[in-house]
Length: 185
Image: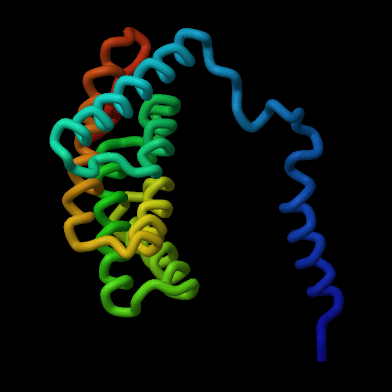
């Protein structure tokens, strides 16, 4: 027999989670507008890092750049203090996601359910290894959608991640009000 009172309480709690928290919050509440200097440094840093990575890709004839690195740039230059933007998370998260998805790809192939399995398993493994980096979920999809070879683990996942982190370390510390990284490991 169903306990309607318990069901009703759970439903109320669920509904409050969806609607209650934001009712008193203005539209700008979730994210404060950063100072114009921070915006400028974020713009310039991400421009230089992506341009440098793209330039090195052309000069070395290696695919050092992939779409998830755009999202990585948002984190390492837009919110460099975030735990998700630290070198351990950027490099480790991209490596974990690439490795997990390459294993899934080579064991099960590429299909809608294996794409879901690759992303979900990558998330779980990043949580277990304390290397959560949101753009790495896209890394898993890139592997699955392009049917990447094992070389993907080195180029672009590892080498591209290292280049972006080095750019962030050098560039973010040029600004007086920025310190990057907060921690390496």
